[in-house]
Image (cartoon, rainbow, N blue to C red; front, top):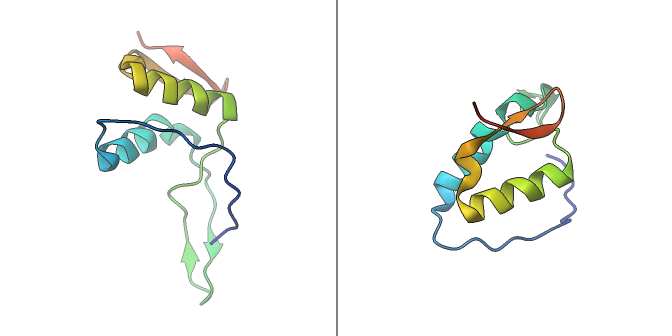
Length: 86
């Protein structure tokens, strides 16, 4: 429903892609864009995969997924940063 420009590619090995997608949705859930748009038929749609996250946070999350430390962090949408989980 929107144009896409690829700005980065990442290679992750040994990770189930369905679980990875769920992890990303859960991790960035607080930053999901809250918007309703009309599809080509005029029906309202609320996108589930649009997030307002700085690119450097995405890079940090990918690195943390790679090294397994993602479980030690959460995303703080107010500060737009990763924070150590308590």
